[in-house]
Image (cartoon, rainbow, N blue to C red; front, side, top):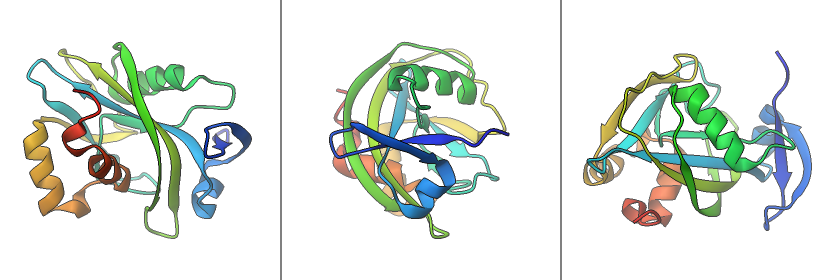
Length: 173
């Protein structure tokens, strides 16, 4: 398997190099990433439980899809690619913002991301890739808010950081 490279960036999201994914997470290097939030006609958010074999945050609930663009790949294109790879569908995505966060993801690994946020809408069948996703569910924002407060350990650090910065995902309304 080809080693996945991440795009290292500065605080303005200007590329400054590349680094193997695991090494970037071990060193906590700032890198480009994206987080996708898919809503249905009931205004419910699609969340995914990460596959149990993932090397970090395995089995935790996350936003609809999240990943990293490849070197020389536009972030929007990468978001569309990964949405299809992980959840088996395509839809229009709107870039709604970005922010920087740093979070311990356990086992000596650190996510330090310049995270681009995308929103999309979808109402058809979702067929998750079992190599990436253990489970999916649609959830109202109020219910998700309660669940994150009551059981924060069940959710990925980045989803909690996004939730803290944008309560009830107020970036999209």
